[in-house]
Image 1 (cartoon, rainbow, N blue to C red):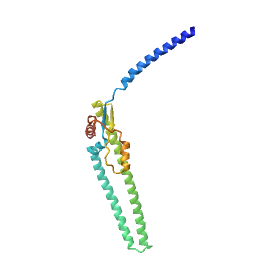
Image 2: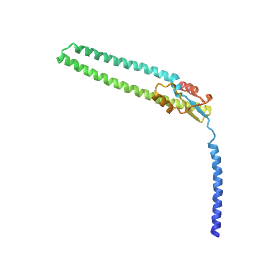
Image 3: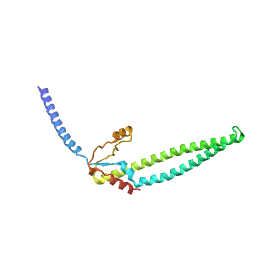
Length: 197
């Protein structure tokens, strides 16, 4: 009988504690599930319209033209040597000297071309990483100023697509299918980005 009483008291105590914990959990859950204030940003629009990005692209275009001119000069020297070889007797001393010179220039041309391709790829990647980090920082600034809790990337899918692969990639990467006009902070982020160093 005594053990039944202890068991009953223990059961009642457990129910009281569970009820208190349940109510506390409900209060906490209500606070956590308050709707977040959401904004959206179109990163492609920022990249297409950023003056900062355009200045970098112009600088890179100048550099690329210089590298291309250097490669074109080497290529024309190779073409000249090849034409010169056509005038010589195959196997002669002059032919062999010209062949060696042409092989050396061909090696330099190929090595420089490969290096320049890698260099440009690394520069584009480094710039893209820097710019994207800057965009993220500007998004955070604008979001905090606007009292937003979450900012989603909202890219526009271009239809008709160039091909099936592009269409599937666009569909797969497009996460925001609809948003109200007032949620878009792209213009503010673009202005903040271009105003930064």
